[in-house]
Image (tube, rainbow, N blue to C red):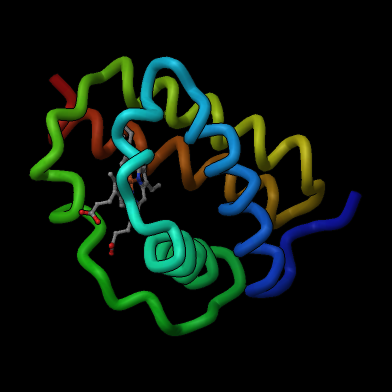
Length: 115
Ligand code: HEM
């Protein structure tokens, strides 16, 4: 298993993550209606900015979620699936950083908007 090193790795990570999200009984309902041809590259851009220093993400991540009725348990499930996806596909310093950073962001979002 290799580490996360390129934009293509970030895209693969997000693709695999959404394979899980879209069939998850707890939180798939947030995602099934999205246009994934638009959404997945945006989320990959977000992670590429964090993990491989690639400029390109220009959204407002917090605002995108503020309008959703997210519960604390939704964040827990999101994080569990994200962490599983990282661990199943990558190994190394950046993969470790992805695990840490996703936990930190999910906790921050939970404290701001988790009900
Ligand atoms: C309860 C857990 C979460 C759910 C149900 C959720 C759901 C969603 C949905 C439905 C969107 C699309 C919003 C829209 O286009 O109107 C979105 C966007 C996004 N989410 Fe999440 N999300 C969750 C947690 C997270 C976390 C913890 C992160 C980051 C670590 C994250 C990163 C993103 C990014 C980068 C976008 C794209 C925002 C943009 O369009 O610029 N999400 N999320």
